Structures are given as structure tokens and as C-alpha cells.
Length: 84
Image (cartoon, rainbow, N blue to C red; front, side):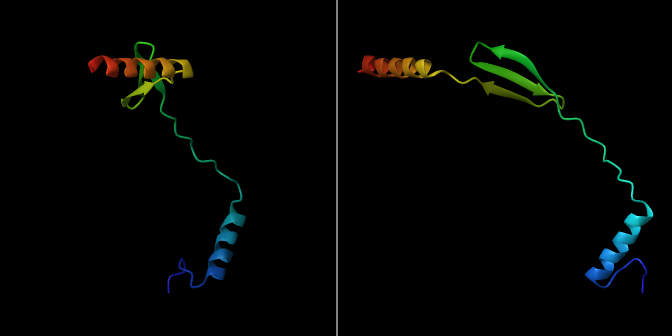
């Protein structure tokens, strides 16, 4: 039988506790650097193209205000009426 293997959960806890008591100092794991974002270009005032440190690019649309939403809806309605 191998000495490193334990047969019960209780034996496992005792073994782990002994190992902790041998060297109780906590070693913090190294932190990985978070990917950094940067603005590549601005597509007018409505969208921004971003890129992270890994080279991935994406388009981020900005929110429009309530007033802009109303104006957009009115313009769509007028365009639909004009087509008739």
C-alpha cells in the first residue's frame, strides 16, 4: 500500500493538517495581468472601436438618450408614410 494514498476522508484531513503544520506560511498566487483595452477609432459620436492587449477588436455602441429615441421613431414613421 502506498503511503501517499489515504483510505478515508478523516485520514485525508489529518494528513493535510500535518502538511499545513509543517509549513504554515501562505504563499499568494501570482496575479495575471488583466487584458488592457484601448480605443482604436471612433465611428462618429455613436460608436467606438476597442482593442484589447490580445488583439481582439469589437465595436461598442453608445447609448442614445430618450429624446434621440423619440426623434428616431418620428423619422421612421415619416419615412414609412412617405413611401405610401
